[in-house]
Length: 182
Image (cartoon, rainbow, N blue to C red; front, side, top):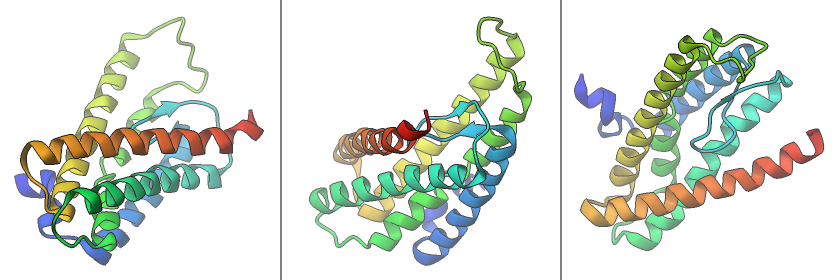
């Protein structure tokens, strides 16, 4: 059970992981629409305004594809092994599955959230959401090390670099998308 929670990529990779990951991302996008949860960055989660349903799917796609692009490129440069893009794409898609819980937790926030009046329940819900994001990052790390055959300190350094670059890329893309909307 522990392996399935932290390293499911030992069992599921490639096309199967990609399809499962996309299904999970689709369910997350639908739940996000109703809970007004925005995944507007590789690591970012915000509860906010309602937007059209397609935007929630676009947020999932941009967050995932930004990570795939940068993790694949950094993995290719850093690993001596041959790396399959389908493995990187699939395992990173599947690593986003804890975000379903974040979307569900976000139902606990009121539609007229006013941060000037903080409710202790909101703080608890926010901390719980952070825990699921941390779990997703741990899954992303395990996905990256398995897909790119990297280990140890080098894997950690390269992972942090790829994660930072993918977050920056996703933020740029979201800025370009949201700019006309704002």
